[in-house]
Image (tube, rainbow, N blue to C red):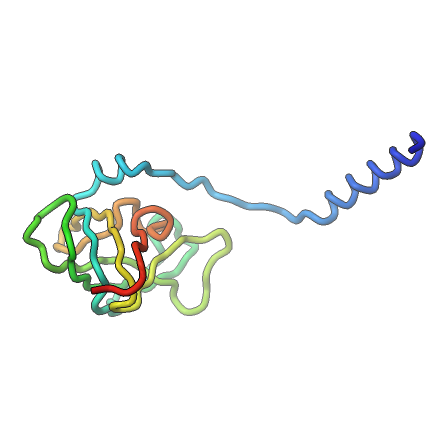
Length: 154
């Protein structure tokens, strides 16, 4: 291949890459190790969602104010407690869902639950009102704080 052809090919490839890539935006997301999750959690449980209901909360998501959210409470039936009160049979998880269809670009990784459909391992902290919230916070609980374990629940 001649040098002129090589230069033209390199020039074309470079131009194509510059034109074909759009602007990219990203936010840093903290990665939690399982040991950190365990250490920082008040409750670590394997549980199945039983009921989910919206609350009266309609707010901007704490930690990501551009995302408007609705508060949600999901009641879980506990299969086993790995950390926390071993006698616990159920708990209420406080989390959020996007308000309407508006999800901001580069937005949160929220969680949602279908009652009885799957079993989860949840790393949680206790809130002042007795409910639990994801240890990793409310912006990205679906990435690290609450994990699907399998198919059908109990």
